Image 1 (cartoon, one colour):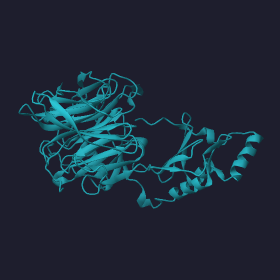
Image 2 (cartoon, one colour):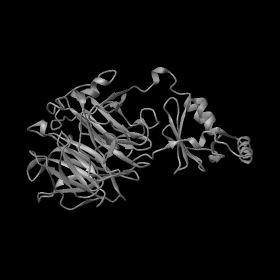
Image 3 (tube, rainbow, N blue to C red):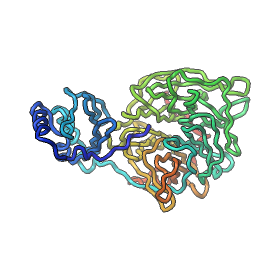
Image 4 (cartoon, one colour):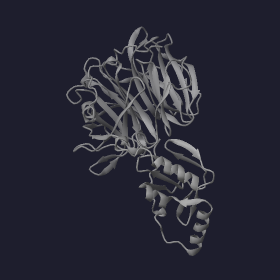
Length: 466
């Protein structure tokens, strides 16, 4: 989901108003309201205005974000939804908040004032990019990295085009295949699925044209895709959206995990139907509170992370008999480390069960890093800025990472991200995907991250204690 582009809040900048409006403003203030602009200036906050929604987004000095809409009592602040005692008003070009709501805003502004509370953020640059997708507007969405077992340098990027296809690129970004199978949203890859007595690699994706989960066999030499679904795996949710594959190392079973735009979650067990095709059986479902898309499963620990776009990252049990209640909340989209929408999620597998959970924070065009193990302790954020040959990224959707040596261009692994605004010599092209060598991300952090470039995704270890 893309955030609405916001114009500067010139409407709240104190334009000349008539005497009647001045009187009305005074009446509003005397009834327990106060102008947001005045208070925001005192707090050192930045305000932007969305003329379509008639709402003001406030970013406090400490990074916390709030959104307040004219005529509404409901508001969002620090990643939470709240309700004021009275509706928010617009008078004479100025937004007025109820006094109690302003007090709540000031309380949030008083947090994280110690310099040690600042969110650590650093910059990296891409070294390669894919060719642009053929469709315009918001089309490119989600990438997945396939490791070539014989020649890692010939590994492939499998990516989705919401305009109508699933794409395959080489590591130089050249498009090799374009499968026009529908409006594909999210994609993921797993290794070693047994079909017809042979082990194959599979890619799965949500198809919004047919409201199905599509599964493809990946050719072990060329990386080309072949649809291997027998009876269509059709979801009961209104519209399929987020997606992840999960290989249970406890049972050796494979699952397709699906999210819907209204927070629905469905889990399908994937099996050989006996005729050389894959069947999908619904084995679990539950619902999150609001729209969710980003999702990634940790095969070693038997967990799955879900990004509820406007609110938080949640950690769940990935097994089909797991609870519908989360194991924990990893982080909240309060505007500091994560700013809504929270979009893509991915995992860097490190040695001995270590590694990193990574999230695309679309609202501030950055990427948050957490420990993969334990309670997912926060580590840092980074942004992707322009290099001499490749532009940077902004408002990212899907991401993927692989900590494995992929030849001379990516000797320690690769981080791949969707880019909302693909620029070339100042000209805007259709969207595409950018590639960053893992060592840039690892070495840029204030405490360097692990570089484990030999963790083969075909050789993961069951670390679940359940």
